[in-house]
Length: 131
Image (cartoon, rainbow, N blue to C red; front, side, top):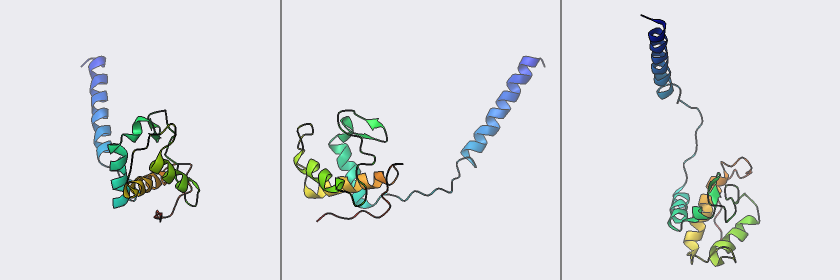
């Protein structure tokens, strides 16, 4: 067997061993991410239904016209009232989507859930419903 064939064989074996490791033990993780609540899941559906990602980003993915929303809602912040106002009435740059109060609350729950995983967020509690 020549040198080229040996190197190719060794690389093939190394690739197979590495692949087996990655797909078995390499993906085991002790990190547990709490799944979103029903309201946050519904909020994600509303976010997708109205194509909010055309203008807004979450974790850097989406459009550039509106602000990045990964850490837009943090606990005990006036940003909740401001977000509710933008979602309810729109603004000169954001159209009024005529969302119901329930849809607005769901989108806000989704954004609170996203904020928990943003590096800049201090949000650690469970979402609080607006009255």
